[in-house]
Image (cartoon, rainbow, N blue to C red; front, side, top):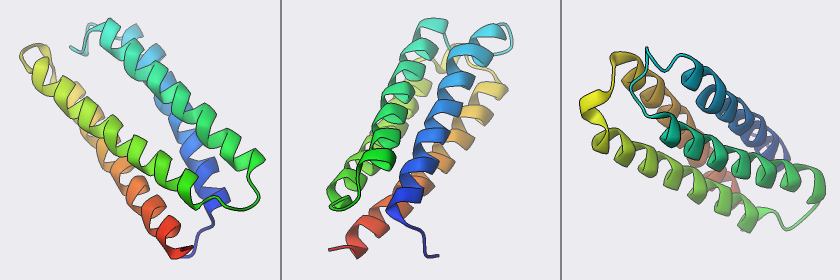
Length: 125
């Protein structure tokens, strides 16, 4: 797969916006179906917004020297998944199958994206 860093930043930024919307609006709105506390969802949504701002800024502002910036967002995405996994463990008693399905799918997608980002960043060196 041959994808540019500029495209990856755009995909990452738009994906983070989508994640923030689901975490901060949809899952909170349907809290009775999801067991993750709203406070936790808002924190994860806020973090996703920070990632979106970073990735979109990189997409629009960088024209060269993007490799270290791509590694930063790849590492941040891995951190997001580790944090999410830890929160799933901490709140496991109150979680529903929908929580496990949503967060599991999100982590698979984000880790996959982080892997592609890391490979593309290393290819530039």
